[in-house]
Amino acid sequence: MTITRRDVLLGATATALVPMAARAETADVAIGVVYPFSGANAQQGVDAQKAYETALDVINKDYDFDLPLAKGEGLPGLGGAKVRLVFADHQSDPQKGRAEAERLITQEKVSAVIGTYQSAVAVTVSQICERYQTPFVSADNSSPSLHRRGLKFYFRPAPHDEMYSTAMFDFLDAMKEKGSKIETLSLFHEDTIFGTDSGNAQAKLAGERGYKIAADIKYRANSPSLSAEVQQLKAANADVLMPSSYTTDGILLVKTMAELGYRPNAILAQDAGFSEKALYDAVGDKLEGLISRGTFSLDLAQKRPMVGKINAMFKERSGKDLNDLTSRQFIGLIILADAINRAKSTDGDKIREAMAATDISGEQTIMPWRRVKFDESGQNNNADPVLLQYVGGKFVTVYPPQAAVAEAIWPMK
Image (cartoon, rainbow, N blue to C red):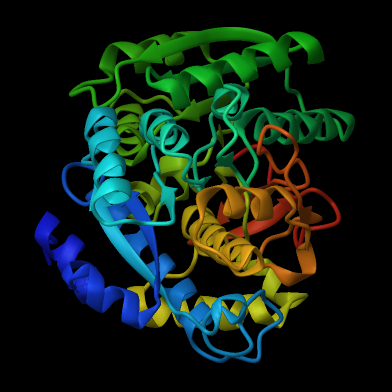
């Protein structure tokens, strides 16, 4: 099925074009959702839409879940008002994202914005939100620099790449202590803000932890060929390959590795494309034993049955299990709606104050986090990453020990 921009803007929320007078009577609360719904990353937008619609169901209907706003219908702080989502297509273009964010705020009159998959788009969207004093929830962007720009209306519930990379190096240290030979690393990252920030964080940690970087390769995002880069990786022959790539680049990387006969001992990926079903549908047979950092694992359902219930709701809509991205999207909207409810207002300043005062126990989320509490920069530093290993066609949690359900297989098969 092909989703057009018109489908996205109108199909999911038929009320988006209701006249303002009629809209006031419904007393709904509009939230803008900015994602790529066309182009190479359109599937990310489709999956995100299903995650947000699942969260919307929890917010607007009555469920016996231990989640904010699950019990009862709508937002009690606003007299039971329902949340309405207005979807917009940024087409993976930061400037298009900027324009769409401004349209959502000035024309659609949204009270807050959430997004955006690519960190490069989050930069421009968050700037527009700051200008209009409209809260922006960075649901699934991981570049560390995003929360360090002095913005007052920016909030990120999930970890950033320095937090993820620290967990990855903690894992490498633990494997070395168990006797694994891990001395050299190859860093492979795309050239947008996500890949650049990830590569910088990993290079810094490698130096601090005493690992030698055998290759540090920055490539052009959406490149038609990665043959030269893979030849460099093969020549370096590091103990661990650490890629930071989105889905199409990740698929091309793995295919090129197979064509050129490059088989690393281990792959430790920075999520992104390496959390996506599309990548494993295409090249999963070549990735048995790959480890990726993450924010979420279905294994948590063994300890929190609610995780399985939410996953079943999402799967009914999408035909997929929740993953690292869609879980962050789901909980991001829950957190934002909870703040709007506590603000008892759709005013941007009051929502920002409520977001800043957020303090939600990890037990009241579907994530393996200690809690959700933002620092002065809008970052939640209590979001504990996990490492997941791809085994037998599914991911299992292998780190940290308190979340692990299996021992890591090292090296890869």
